Image 1: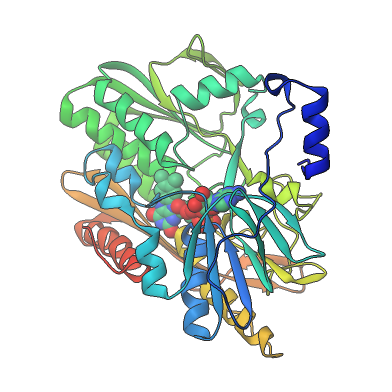
Image 2: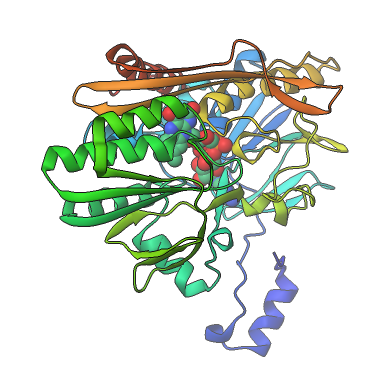
Length: 436
Ligand SMILES: Cc1cc2nc3c(=O)[nH]c(=O)nc-3n(C[C@H](O)[C@H](O)[C@H](O)COP(=O)(O)OP(=O)(O)OC[C@H]3O[C@@H](n4cnc5c(N)ncnc54)[C@H](O)[C@@H]3O)c2cc1C
């Protein structure tokens, strides 16, 4: 991104009318209005599950630290459990929380601003509400979509696809569009896709297929859910999902495995695969994810990584060669599940690493843990579960599942109840209140 200083800005004014100014953000040159601090300043960018967890656990590690969480959203919406909103088991307000409450509980500062630049030499970030200096910076900006992975490259087509058939894996706005679609859906094909690569919440496209089919059944809608997946079988809990598709939903779900999406025409509602093409009436089309573009723009990505993920020490999370900058959450390059549970457990470890390093010490790596419940039935509410942790195989230079990682594929009401308990306990831990 181009930096605009006063001289450059004046020269733009001189050479162009305001309406023809180049599209650059006009950056305030003032310091951000934050409380005065003494001691180390840790700035965390991104108030998702990762940033929120790191902020909370850092203050628990060392109450003398000054932690500022910079987040562009005004309120927090929980993506985990949001599939339950799509089919009416939870509401929007059950899933929406205040950053101010999290900051008060965790004793850190929430600063509502969007970050646009990083100057690692000066240890400074630029936001739309002024610049902030850091001693330690943590970037946890999450993921974005790569529409070229499903053959959609034209900007108007991408915008139309995002506005009409969003994936629903990044923002609440997307979920609202999907809820609206489902409220007025009367008949026809509702298309879902499971992307290639390691994408956010591996179980979620399959869970979503079940819950939308359950909604169709409940409302007696003459609709069919088509789930397109390039894999031969579901990415997780394969046995549990395949039996739910067959035993609970029969022909209401058509699982198109080993099928690749090659193109989508969002103007004519046509989806093209390597086998066929068909017209759809509704959908949530999920392309491959990539690390938030901020990571690439700041030069912090690994150029060999197809998902533009961060180039970090996988055990300590600092950018290679800079122990002042850490990168966490779903833009990490390690093949861990891109899930809130990994972000939370990894966040606890990162907080320990940063607190120890500020005192000239170090800590041993501990595995993050992925706990992923999937509600596959709504009447009664029954779920399945997968639980994994990781280990690094030095001999083969690769990550593996640790022994003890397990998929619970028999759907049950007990796991259904645990799904809610998992979500509400983590939300209470971060925000101090329970809404379901
Ligand atoms: C439908 C669905 C169901 C899911 N179910 C589960 C589940 O059951 N269990 C589970 O463990 N996980 C689940 N997940 C996955 C989970 O939501 C993600 O893995 C998790 O949100 C990742 O956290 P994060 O902090 O890395 O990213 P995010 O939660 O995306 O947070 C990134 C934050 O950074 C902010 N940000 C980005 N750029 C800037 C900027 N320039 N300036 C300021 N702020 C910025 C964003 O506004 C955002 O708040 C689910 C996800 C979805 C979509």
